[in-house]
Amino acid sequence: MINSWFEEFWRILGLLAIAIFVGSLVGYVAVSLVLVLGGYLGWYLYNLYRLEWWLRKSRSYVPPSSMGMWDAIFTELYRVQKRHQKRQRRIVQLLSRFRDVTAAMPDGVIVMRGHGEIEWWNERAGQMFELKYPADVGQRLTNLVRNPGFHEYFQRNDTNEIYNFPSPENANIILAVRVTPYGQDQFLLMARDVTLLQRVEQIRRDFVANISHELRTPLTVMSGYLEILGNDTQFQSGPLKRPIELMQQQSKRMYRLVEDLMLLSRLENQQKPMKHELVAVPQVLATLCEEARILSGERQHNVTLQAEPELFIYGDAKELDSAFSNLVINAINYTPAGGTIALRWYRDEQGAHFAVKDNGIGIPPHHLSRLTERFYRVDVARSRETGGSGLGLAIVKHSLSRHEAQLRIESEVGRGSTFYCDFPLDAIAAKGSGRAAVQSK
Ligand code: ADP
Image (cartoon, helix red, strand yellow):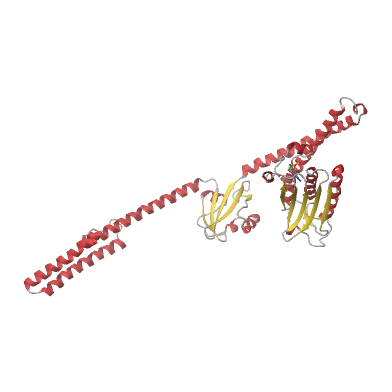
């Protein structure tokens, strides 16, 4: 470009010299200068015209050719054009690759704006949600999906939550959707077909429910006969006494296990909708406290109860009783004789809480997150010794989650543990809400 400027400079200088020379020869220097400069200006205008015409009308990527400065400008423009063309081609390629990827995705993807207005979707999402292009662009997804639960899920705006519901395309297909915010006021909805997964999960649940149900009858028969044998005077001494005692112990353990498995299956299957009755928790806990003292027996634990007398909640009295008693039984089982077990039922601005605090053996921190898994035990031998099935905390967690409550555990090895059941504020019943239920055994 610098060369072109140089060339141009010398060209103008040359033209002016020629004009002066020719002008002085014929005696009209001024006229000659005007003519030469006029010609030069004309050439400039002509090039400008060609440039404007090429920019506006020409379909060719190749600019007109010229000389000097103009040629340099045309060449530079050509280079810019080429670069732009290459970049555009790359973007188109990228876009088509993106389209291929999203079309091949087995999951549905929908891009939405602030209030759920649909901007874009991939093929799978189009099928899952029966979206039509272009009619549904700009429509709110919540207006197209006729599922009240989905509306509520969308309003909640909880990015960690996954919501399962039947696909609008086919009610037999279960979709798991998750909405994640990104960029500025934009949302990405990912939908996955989880029908098979749910079916397998259901088969597993049914299997556990059926097998525990099937095991109960033979176990009842066996326990019955073992009891008769145990009461028979001819077996109360002699070599068979100990084996019969052991068989009785083990059949009792198995029976407890089967009962716990059945309860867990019932809670998991959620066939029975949760009862929404008023539960007089202070009374439930008073009974539980008495039972704990009886269970402690010779171990002489100091079991105390502190409960707000008018703090009632809505829920299922039987399920709550089973959850609370599991926690209390654990506290007794994992606290050495003479230890203290403090039960508390109170409310604060977060909601209602039941706390079972013991000064027992405690739990190492790395076990805490896995305690509510089925059959998870910190010390298997100790748990067996106490007659535990390893299902207690799984039952507690399920019962609580059906009440939208959560289990919280704090523990320190050698100092004791506190198990909290945290109920939300809206589970708390207002004063004088009616007759409260107390679970009777
Ligand atoms: P288990 O029938 O074995 O008691 P749970 O599900 O009720 O089963 O409890 C799981 C494990 O959690 C127990 O095996 C025990 O190791 C531990 N655990 C539960 N409660 C306590 C407690 N209060 N103190 C110490 N460890 C506990």
